[in-house]
Length: 227
Image (tube, rainbow, N blue to C red; front, side, top):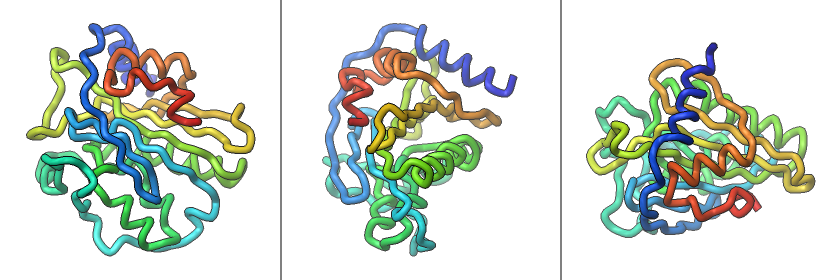
């Protein structure tokens, strides 16, 4: 029962309407991660990075939790202030906790190319659960490659905007073991203001969701995101 809202969301994502015309996508590369940024939604479409045990065995803390505008993005650029007072927190795609052994890498996770509006419930609940699970997987299996991204509904379904910033309906995360790529895990997490749990899905289900709802990356196969 606890996953019924998320399963309902999956049905909506798969069934509602046709994908819209793909919007501009720009790649921003940092040492911590690569961000494929959706210029129409002012959100990262997908962020990709590697995770090993060495990446998170430190205990560094950020000097500030404010996000700095990523000047590698074209103008107009989203700012930390764009989410102020909206009721949403500034969520990480690549977590700060995955980069807590070097100050420069930790600082990069606080760039707006890695920022998305999340509910507090999502950020501190199911999204954190998936982050923690990925660190366990990295300890158990060695280096893994992760792709995390946003999923949107059509405007006709009542999409929320924070000014020009579009609020994702859900997020996905793919993790794959580098040395044994047959080991792969995929989750979809609802960006909900009520409690929900991460949902494990298969490659085909996620590909359908991305093709129907996240048209900006619909042309990218799941294999391309994580290979």
